[in-house]
Structure formats: C-alpha cells, structure tokens
Amino acid sequence: MLKSTTCLATALATLIATTAAADGEMNLYSSRHYDTDERLYSDFEDATGITINRIEGKADELIARMEAEGANSPADVMLTVDTSRLARAKEAGLLQSIDSTILEERVPANLQDADNEWFGFSQRGRIIFFNKDKVANPPATYADLAKPEYKGMVCIRSSSNTYNQTLLASIVTHEGPEAAKSWAEGIVANMARDPQGGDTDQLRGIVSGECDIAVSNTYYFARAIRKDVKGLSADRDIVSWVFPNQDSYGAHMNLSGGGVAAHAPNKENAVLFLEYLASDQAQQYFSSGNDEFPAVEGVELADSVKALGEFKADDVNLSEVAKNIPEAQKIFNEVDWK
Image (cartoon, rainbow, N blue to C red; front, side):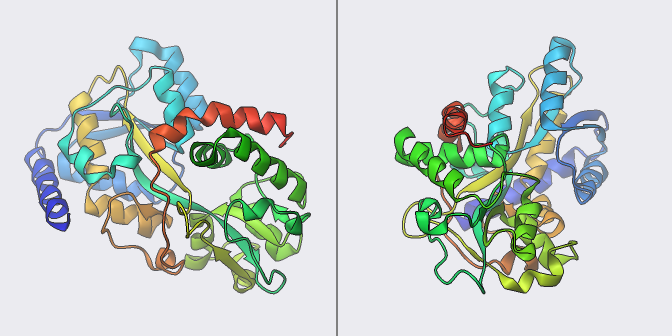
C-alpha cells in the first residue's frame, strides 16, 4: 500500500510539472471559507500556470446558482463541506463522472462517490466532548449519548446542520431507521438548551457551564489548540473528549470534498486541480492550515490534530450514507429536533 501511494505521489508531481506551461484557467465554486486555502490555490497556480477564478459563497447558494446557470454555467469545480451537500449537487445533476486513476487510488474508496462524481479531500471527526470535572462517566458511544443519565446535559446543533444530518444518516446506515429514530428522540430529551450556533458555540457551552457534554467536529477544538479562540482556548483544559464507538464501527467522519461541474468548460484543468488536492502537499495543508484529517492515508498530521490522539474512524461508504440523508431529515422532523 505504501509503495502504491508513493508511486502515485510521484506520478502526480510529474503530471503537475508537465503542465507547468499550459496556462489556461479554471473556475472554482467553493463554499470552503478558510483563509488557509489560499496556499492551496496559489501553489497550484504556480505549479501549473493555470489561473483559478473563484466564486465563493454558502453551499446552498452555490448549488442554486449552478442550477440557475444550467448548461451555461462557467463552473469547472465545486468544492463544499459535508457529504450531504455533495450528494445534493450530484442529485441535481450538477456534477459529472470523471476518469482519474490518481483520484481513484489516492482517495480511499469509502470517501468516493460510487459514480466518481465527487471525491473527499479532508475529514473531521464528529465526536463527543465533555467537562472532565463534572462528567465522571462520559458516553462511550453515540448510542450512550441518548441515555437518560445525560438528561439536560447535551449541547448540539440544529437538525438543519449538515454535519448532524450526515451523522444521523450514518446511524441509519449502520443500525436502521428505527434505532436511529430512538437515538434522535433520546438526544432531544437530553438537550441542555434548544439548538443554537455553530460547533464552536457547542464547545463554548461546556466552558460557560450551559452544558456538560457537546457534539462537535474535531477541527473546531483542534483550532483552539493551535491558536486563540475566544471563549474556548483559555479554558480548554477543562474539556476532554471521546472518539465514539471504538469497539464497533468507529467515529463518524464528516467530509470536505469536490467534483467536476457537469458543464465544465475547462474539464482537463478541473481534473488536474482535484488531482492536486489529493497530493501529499495539498493534503498536509488541509491538516496544518485548517486542523483537518487528510483523506489520503499516511500524510503527516498537524500537531494540533495529533494532540487529539489516535482512534478508529468509521470506514462506512459515504455514498451509502448519502442515500439515507432524506430518511435522516424525516426522522429529525418526526422527533421535533429543532
């Protein structure tokens, strides 16, 4: 496996080098809003001579824009966060299948669309955080989080949050809709407050004392390790964490990924850009610049990410999880998860 990865990395470097004088452009529609991604774009431009023209916005806005533009859309690549949005773009006919040995072999199979319409490039574990001074026996699994003993203790985001939609869809995939509904009912009963804010706000809830347990993606906490995050970093020593389900299927991983637009006017450049995102160099930027887990195996982690410790990640096929997102939303509505 290591030998194959090394060969592919070399092939990718060669591919980028041979296009250095190609020039041209590539139109990127991105809902990734991280300043650190600037390095990804500038290094690609320097290596290839291809200019990246960016349109940035919220994922739903970009999807709506591409739908309105139709066959006249200038989009070459769509980058977004979470499997649910990638699945939505595919279902809307906004992406196309591509043939890339580099992507198919570099990106783990469970992080690829079954039809090669999207690929994952970075991951965030959706795990359980808790106040270690107040919670002697933290939940060890997602199922435990719904137990009555944690009533009134849990901070978690709304049902409209894509991270939660994909988490619940993964529970549907593993355990079926009835078990997933029972879990969602238990979480609603255990909420310390109505859902509000983003993942960082759930972690701040632990610091402020509003809740003793929170569900958040790992990179929000890793960021507070790497730099100062108001309302979190100064008191993060009271926060500990659990990677759930280590004796079963592992911790759920949210995905950031992208695909080539259905009507891409610069398809070759678009594919090359996605292949670049799978390179060791780009994968390291995802970790060091934004505290994420790389999608490609064997890539060095940033110190802030290493600090979270080793764990077993759920390797469920995210194409299968994506199919259960509508069922997850139905369950959220049925249990009145706000």
